[in-house]
Structure formats: C-alpha cells, structure tokens
Image (tube, rainbow, N blue to C red; front, side):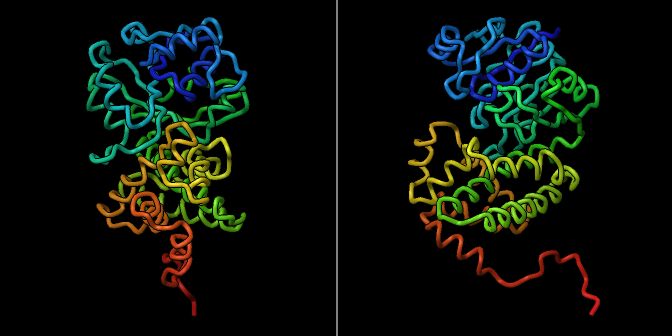
Length: 336
C-alpha cells in the first residue's frame, strides 16, 4: 500500500482518488475550496460523478501540507490554467525527489510551455511525470476498462506510476516521450471543439471522421517538428485520446463546441457546460505554436477565429472545405 496525495478535487482528481483507493492505496484528496472540502466530506459524492461514492478511507482536506507529507506519489489534477499557481503553493512542502504526476491537459498561454515544463520550473526538486490517454473520469470512477500512458524522463519513475495505477480495469503503458504525450493531450481538445461545432451545425459522421483524421494530421505535424515521436501521436495519447474526446458526450470540449455550433458565444457555452473547457485555453496557444514553428494547422486556425474573432461557425466550415486543392499526403510520389 502506498500513500498518495491527489492535489485537486475536481472530476478527474476525484475519479483517480477512487481508482487508487480501489487499488489498495491510501489516497488523500486536497481541495483549495473549503466549501468543497465540507461538501465532499459530508456527501461522499462528487456532483459530476453521479452516484459513485467516495470511499470513506479517502481523507478529504484543505491543508496542502497534510496532503503532501509522507506521500510516495503526488497527483496534480487541477485545471491547466491553475497548474503554475498550485505548483508554486506546493513548493514549500515538497521533498526532494518526490514524484509528481500531472494529469491535466493543456499548454500554458503566453509561455507556450507544456504543463510538465511549468511544474519543473515551480518544483525543481520534483521528479515530474505525466499520465494521459483516452480516459473520461465518469467511466474511470465506475470501473469501466480504460488504458493510459505514464510518461517520464526516467524509466523508474514511469514504472512507479504504472505500478500504482494499474489494475484489472485500468491498464497503464509507459513511454519516455513526455513531450508527445502532453502535446497530444492538449491539442486534441482544440480539435474536439471543432468536432462539437460541426455537430452543432448539424453535420454528420462523414464530417466527424474528416475532422478526427485531419486533426491528428495537424497534431502530428506540429508535434514532430517540436520533438515529439510520431509513434506517440498514433497511439493512446494521440489518436486514441482524440477519438474519445471528439465522439463522447462526456467530453466537455465537444459539448461546448456543440453549443457554439448552435449559435452560443464562447462565454455562453462555457457557462452552460459549467466545467473548465480546456480546449478554449489551448486554442490560442496551439495557434501561437503553429506560427512559431511555421506549421500549417487550418482547423486550429478556424477554431481560433470562431472563438476569439467573431467568425461564424458555418463560414469557418466552408473555408476549411474550400481551401486550395492538394494531395492528402505530400510525401507520396506519383508513378505517372
């Protein structure tokens, strides 16, 4: 049995605490909001996880030092926009060499850093790892079979995360490609917004398939130029995560996109979903990265124009369809 601190009691953090408790570990769940600590302690339910109970052996606390002390693993599960702030608050209580696993998905706006890079800046004494893949919290908390990938700089750190999380319903692979894992997880949220917008416009399965396929092409183009491995983008944290996020109504990014496709503004859609929509924050960063590395990302570009420049979703779709004619894969050569 390991002692594990889950820093962030949102939907995903709570689901992972439930999973870890089910694996026989002693999990402690931290929230920055006193009212949330009280509500979760009293009800033993998270409002976004239905009737899934929070086991009594999971201690819920608002004391960050308590949540971190004597823990073999710290799971950082706050939304991407709060990662730097939360990591900074963790710094005084972190032990040198303590393993921190980030499970949020995003790119920091402005710095364009991956979240592991942000955490390493704020917590230089930590061994930073990531856990990512096609994994909706609602299904993980119910014990439905799920697969993810643990990424780390050192093999032993990835294997520690693998050993603690893995169970008969939660399979974990390992990978040294932290950059590819994080880029796939962040950028797929932008494509999922596009898929949702298409749904909101009344498009069909053909459109969804096209967005997923061309979306992973965009992600792979940028990711490999930045140093990620192409194998990662064709795996669980790339195409796998993209498929589940574009296809499922569990996806807050897809749900927000549907509303935008129906005519809601970005602000109205986020308010209606009532959860953090990571794709909105990642969209601007994705566009900036595409410009920095001079990589063509037409879907990302159109999503940005719809979100931040007042372009209609229908016009964005037509512009994508009427782009200049080209080969699907420019690396292929005609024989005649």
